[in-house]
Length: 75
Image (cartoon, rainbow, N blue to C red):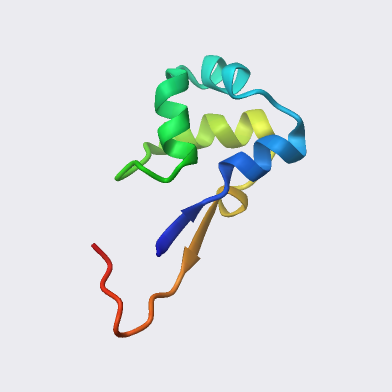
């Protein structure tokens, strides 16, 4: 699995709409949706910083590392 994005959980906990977060961060709702689904290959530090500032959280509240089994490959 590798990196798991828990942005949707944080949005729900903070009762924040994706639209409001996207507007604050300066990205499209479509790109925020891809980020929430974990379908991006990376995230810029300034984007992560703005997300954390808006949600009053730490990067570790949003991004979780899950170790792979030795038989699994990380692509």
